[in-house]
Image (cartoon, rainbow, N blue to C red; front, side):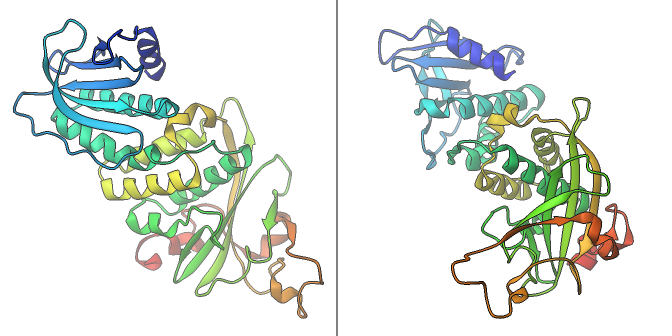
Length: 339
């Protein structure tokens, strides 16, 4: 649908008058749900949702580059009517605006939710992504996010506010998941290596003991496969679908995704297809192969600021606690045992 919406906006001729609005009605919506994709005299994109005359006006929220108003307007030669008007004031945000429009049109087309409520709920869902400017994730960052979301949804799910809160979603945290009883560092490698992947450990703190609780390492091995069904964008969509009845959790996850640098408006960039070869959870206990600051009793040599090293998972077999989320060794990740 997004390509269709882009084509409609691109086909509109900017009105000669700055006050005029040219628009085309969105297709595939019920007759009683008129919505127009429009362009004003300054070339700015609008999404205009026709509402009953007694609709309570929406209050403008602090949203950079997005203007929200409820007023009587005329679109092209159509009669003047009351619209909730969403206007994109920053052309750089047009892709995100198009994604918001797509989401809203899907809601309006598939539910009986009042138009005003549908607009409010759609804007809330997109709040985090609208207010963030990202240059997109690198291939390595996207792979890392895939691994963290895979662990969150498959190993810690069903995801509630509690599980989402344990996900730090920032490179500045020592470990990817933290709570008082345990911490989990997630490592993902795209390789077909026999015997398990080799992971890069970024610094001496990444496998160091947490302040409290037990440290675990989750190793995910994937490979590129054109026939595989797993993609980062698909994983994000599946998680959002899981949380459709839990708005609080969805908003928290969206905030974390936006902080990570992910924007669903750029989903096409994250359709790399991955086949999962192995997923394993290890306890980082006594003797586990790792380097920490304690490894260097007298401190790092002068002039050495930090150390990055690689860890071969094949050397960690004795510390394996689970090869699937249903294994007893992973039970602490779910339910009362993980509370």
